[in-house]
Length: 253
Image (cartoon, rainbow, N blue to C red; front, side):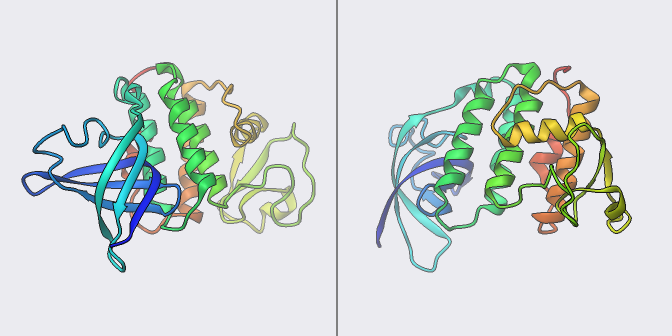
């Protein structure tokens, strides 16, 4: 079996039989991969904390051609991101990022996506409890953009007429962004959003996480993001981690 050596982030893990675990990894060279960690439950000496959720390091996989499950040979950890487990808001935001990667990244190499998700997880790990929703939103929009679905925020997504930043606008999920008043009649189901909401999304896409939201604004942004994902990335399976992150509140904004 060929050996794949790659940087990797643990996005999901579950027990397998009596002594092993199956882990889902985002890798720099091969996208999302599943691997069997033999004996991981019997003794932590072999892998230590390397198989903890959101851990990152250098993985070696014995790749089985034309198979979905490979064998994990080793995992040398470089960071644990233990802070994500210390706060439920951080954990649910990070789990949502992991869910987007697992669902939509595929198996192709995408170094930009890998670097983006690593940076997003680091930012969420540093997030204050009252900031986890904003940092989660910022991270989700950055991931969506790297996946190729950056929303149009400056001009009409249909006729390309420039729109003033100070104007409220209609956000059409099916059209891929904001639409002008004339085109909004051709894009049913659009959602009116204030100019401040459009500015917030633009800041997040640029990597600026300084946006502050009250709880009602945060909920509106989560709903808008969910609807956008449903229009462009959903595969008819529910985004369970996103649902938990969207509907629960553990700290007031």
